[in-house]
Figure 1 (cartoon, one colour):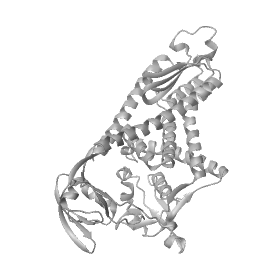
Figure 2 (tube, rainbow, N blue to C red; figure 1 turned 90 degrees about the vertical axis):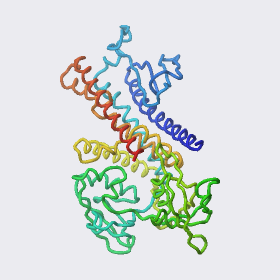
Figure 3 (cartoon, rainbow, N blue to C red; figure 1 turned 45 degrees about the horizontal axis):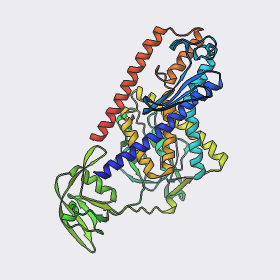
Figure 4 (spheres, rainbow, N blue to C red; figure 1 turned 90 degrees about the horizontal axis):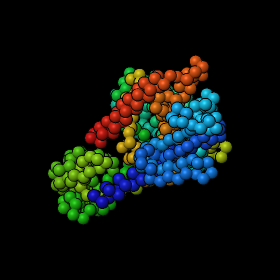
Length: 460
């Protein structure tokens, strides 16, 4: 129980750090550009709701605020539409600024997030991002992959003529292209020591269910190669089900409830749905095989009940050097790759949003605050590089999201300015009020959908 509470607190802390930092970056973009263009800023707030801390600058009177709800922020500018403004201050109000100044101020927030991502990727690529080569492991029979001719041991070199270095590169390429049409992979057998060939994967554009989280690779029908880790018990919890059943450290689990255990990952997968049941576990102890009856305990993990028996497994992975890939570049080259990575991620985000709207990609890919908390915690536990990578990805997402043409967002306000630029006068207050209500309704629907997806993932 204490471990679960500490884990939850750690995830929340990582989430607050991530969101607080990225919201600060976003709002600072608005703040900095507005001031540079001569628009007076009244408040700079990180978070919404009741202020936890605030201080007014003695130099320019800007009130800086840290509020209680760390899910956003705002920059309040001088605006005659929101109250009386002294005549001498009117030239510095937002509403009197030329359209081009308002546009730059609005775009500065999202572009600050994209600039942050570029810097984060640049740092990562300078240090070096470790990864695994995209070597094909098991290929399912009668699947898209098997029918295309993909074979175990193939090294994937390109996805739709785009060079790939790691498994992550391949996954991104498949997500980007398989919902558009057929995708050609260039592969080489025996990791480049044999002739290369092209493998054409058939499009999933008419099967959006295959784009749901954690189903794409199963839908295509292949897995990446990973070393097999024997399911050897490292320690047994005192007083737990495993100890009561007679399991010992050093035992290798061969089968659970009649189902073979081929790898360490099979243990938690097979035990998870068996909470409260008495089952037989087959183990290898020295040179003998022993079958022991074990009562599976119920434990809560990430909000759902899962089966546990009170063991810690040996999880040391020895990855052969020839399977490792390191993405590392010189300072200038790393900057170029950082820009490309940010651009590609943003472009893919826009594509995925559009494909969700037209029904080619499952809306189950949308994640809400619960998933964000979990992913932030997981990234923080993996170390600084993983957390920086997570920050870069979320920073791009925040930038893209705020560019959507929804009235409550920066993109919607940009649309207002463009309409004013074309028609020569501002949009009427009535139209703005109605569109704001529509925008609020759309955002509430989106938040409801992401919350529903999070709940379903946990219940599932």
